[in-house]
Image (cartoon, rainbow, N blue to C red; front, side, top):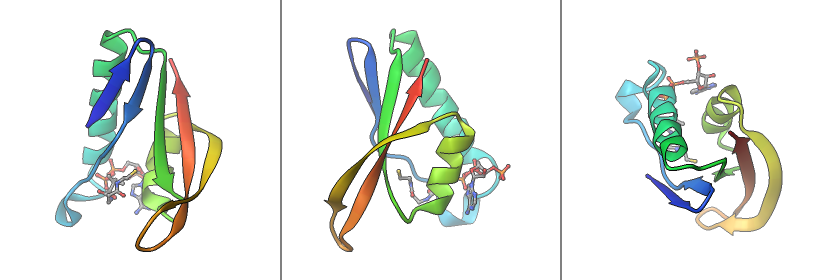
Length: 89
Ligand SMILES: CC(C)(COP(=O)(O)OP(=O)(O)OC[C@H]1O[C@@H](n2cnc3c(N)ncnc32)[C@H](O)[C@@H]1OP(=O)(O)O)[C@@H](O)C(=O)NCCC(=O)NCCS
């Protein structure tokens, strides 16, 4: 799921069923969301990811997202920092 306002977009949620992981679906979903956002004039896309979420961080890094910030104790159950990532069009 993604949101956009003027020239900024945000990827809110992304998940692939465990049995379908590591076959390119996550990458395809991200690319599709980026295409939709670009078509709406979005220049910068932001998202937050749990610091410990290595699979998601690897996926986003491979798509060109860069780390631009940290939100302390952003998540609950368990409490954990969020890493803020940004992709420039
Ligand atoms: C993150 C998630 C969406 C990835 O989906 P996926 O379909 O498995 O990802 P893909 O197969 O498209 O992987 C694309 C690239 O991401 C990276 N990646 C994905 N899973 C990885 C893992 N477990 N370990 C390391 N790198 C991983 C790799 O670079 C991979 O490319 P490769 O397979 O050619 O090496 C999936 O693990 C998931 O649903 N996780 C739970 C929900 C979640 O964390 N969502 C993100 C919240 S911000």
